[in-house]
Length: 209
Image (cartoon, rainbow, N blue to C red; front, side):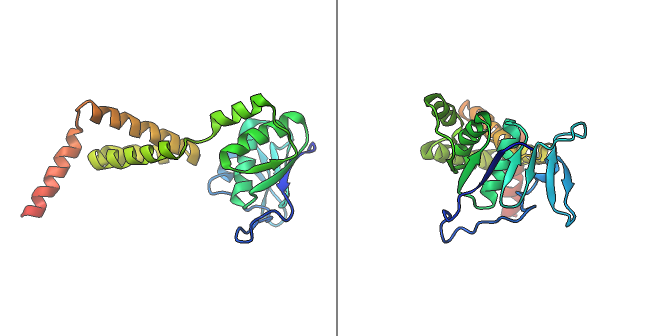
């Protein structure tokens, strides 16, 4: 394993934000994305993409996470672990490509990074990955509420399919946002979802009896 790694910055965590350095302390569903070797205590330690390589994509040392290469998907999951453990500020070390990728992706999780000085194009790349601003998030939430109100059956069906087929929460959220946008376009065009209308009428009739 190379010198590529991230760790929490000593003494930088807010008093009310506990920091975990416990090996195997992972976000829900992350371990299932990999082939995992465990240590003698049964804790997840070495994360592999497949069984063909002897070198793990990244390794969990508890208070430090290390990686063999600067693979973006592996770095994303390392940062998810860091955020899960309360590492709001991290120190990055290793190759320039690794440190750069960590800095760019950490911005999307609102993690501060020490150990890399970003270039102008790094900042531009990071801006493209940052989630929508508050006003956009409010509109997205309003659209979700509207879609669920006017097409509850359709939205529930989509949610079930997405949960059954996709494990990654980030991808689930992205697919659901697309589904909401599609329903909103139908509603704005004056279309209605016949099954939802029929079920709404049926429930209304049941209440009136």
